[in-house]
Image 1 (cartoon, rainbow, N blue to C red):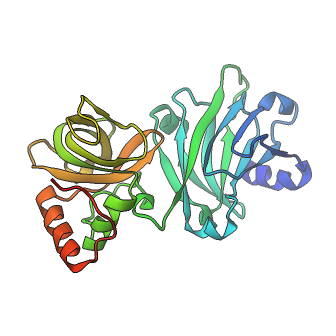
Image 2: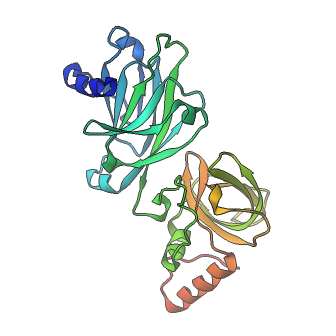
Image 3: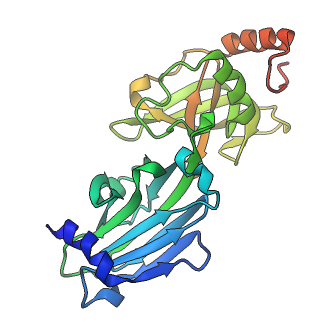
Length: 285
């Protein structure tokens, strides 16, 4: 089997290449033009970065090794292909066993997939084609801690549909990449399993990056707008009331984690405030 041969050939190849900055790697399959079954080993040690493989031939094994080894068991890697990525499939590899992560069609559709670092390394296998010209396999990656609410698999089908427990809600407003108050303006269905929800916001408590833009007012006030992604099966629709939206920012996009009705959250927050169990303070006026 060709895939088994590729993995076995790694022992004979002995070709190891580190990225110059340990976050990003850029290589070319032309160096393997007469050895189309070579396997390249790449080690990346940052929380986020990218890979660009020109004229892919053979395979590249991407080992994501964070600088804090003790954290590896609690990290997930999310991969977002570039829109023009083609010429290879992405697998998760462990001890010679492969699990398909992204097909070329998935990459063209811009689908994001995640896996636990405990599952293994990222195995990028070039498609069997004679003409490799004008083909580039390229993607971004991010490592996400599963110890935080933001690390609860934001790209999975069920991550945003399970109601969050009270302690999760209280912690989410303190530790999430974003925490905002507002309502659903309308819903855009981007794929068969994902929806992009356009939200109109009255208050931004926190945001890791400028995924929500203001029409004026400053200091979290005024009107804000933006998009939040979530599984379509959650059934988002306009006119459901005012929510507290919290979640993670992945590849410049906001992904929903917890979204209680604001009136329910504020009741919970004031109870915790009276009991002295709130993990952080917010302005609720």
